[in-house]
Length: 457
Image (tube, rainbow, N blue to C red):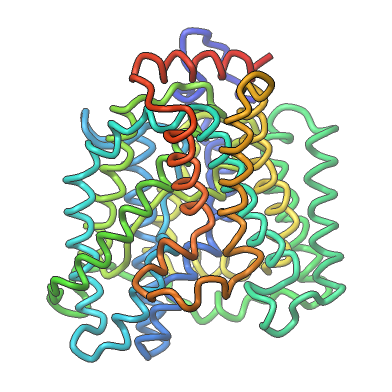
């Protein structure tokens, strides 16, 4: 809840006092940080870069995260930015293709950056066409996709709570990690129930801070990396040299960006529902265009393709703070973290199990938003909608419950087949078209308005 009592200003456009914006912005940064730095770490190691070069990749990533977040949430002119509380970060969908490029001596890091820039240009060009596909996303489709986003993210939150990013890593499932995650979750829930005003809004941040204090006291958190980190690091374009442009690599990354745009569309529709601001085709186009512009910026400043971070959608739902200026503050903080490595190292020191307790709450909120949208769908008189949800969720669960299900398929299809969100989205759109048919923009808009009105009761 915000403190601005101006009924003429939409909650998305409210501006809070600077100290509150800073605290809420830090909360958003903490939620996305682990995901934001994971991609440069993975790709940097695949490229066999030196530790200082990987550190530079991370700083460049944080710097660009901030810039692209500002463009998306604040907006630039009439053509860029969806102007919703969106945090932007490097997409995991591009990891597989980039690791493959890293293993190709003819491409390497310069080939990756060339492919990233090419894909960014492609995204800017096709964004208007993706934005016109809004009639393909009636409530039964958007609700299913958002439900699947939450379910897919829950795996991340659960792994965080176990203390490692994957089950095969050391310390995974340590009872101490599980206990700390439960402790942080309990703090978030207590503050959500009994906290008032701003305290309730930053319940996740308070939970993480208290978790960090306890983790430090029991010797599970240290600041050695902070001591070693530099105070200032300038991010220059083309740090590693001029990008190398390869046709196949560019086409591969462009395919990844189609995946990114479909997933981003789901995020934007979810945020529109959570914040109460209707997202139309022009809004989608402006938001998706920033995915492209951000990816171009990423290629120029030595980092990778960008997308909206779904983790932060859950945070908006948990806190009830809908103003986009919180993400503007988060963007500024990310830029500072990129330029001041000590800040980045400080946030990196937060143990994953501390984030896990809050993550399960936030990612569950995304799934709950999908369920709320689906409650407005007619399942009694139109049984076709049951099939849309049932089969689409089934498709989306494949990568989660059977990771090797598609191992015999061509590796080029990896970005499609190993994304539960994308599989669910494609299945939902296709099944809805087959079972319910195409609806005009006017019909789709009216159905979306009706669903929003029903869901608010």
